[in-house]
Image (tube, rainbow, N blue to C red; front, side):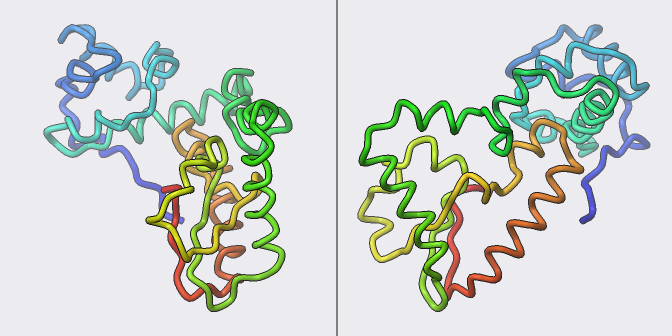
Amino acid sequence: MVRPSFKEGLCNRCGLCLIECPILGFPPERAKEEIGRLMEGKETEVLSRCNSCMTCDLLCPKDCNPYHLILRRREERYEREGLPLRIRTVLPLEPVNFLSIARESMPEDERKMLESWSEALRAGVEGKEVLYAGCNAQISPYLLRTRLLEGLTVVGEQELCCGEIYYRMGLLGRMEGIAEGVGKRLNSLLPKKLITFCP
């Protein structure tokens, strides 16, 4: 998998990505300082305050992909320091995470919906039109109870994560492995058509 990258040679450190950021909104001088710190691999609060909305990539007048620089620096930090607990709880493949917590408070009919998605995976969906309900849909299964999706076989389980949250957290190596695994699994199902709820 080819990773998108920050185009360091194009960046003039104008800081617009951090000035106009809806979360950080730094004053111009501070923004220039922080983008410099990111580029130099120095500690910056950008790594902990960025909410991964990717707006910085849209704002950059040079199309440098500053979000990818943030991801790279996060990955380096996690390799050095390990994952903080607050990050581990949002990762769907960790033993205790947002999905396991959400399931505990779900009504019985929602839990049965999740079970039916796993059963559909085991039963096989070859030649069917399938909706892949990744971990995002598993937080609120009722979202998929709509006439728009009638006739689709819904498949999903906690272990069938697409890797999107790992990407947003900067866990690029793990994301690549997860994406490869889910791709193989979904391709092996041989559906007629596959629609995804996750990115």
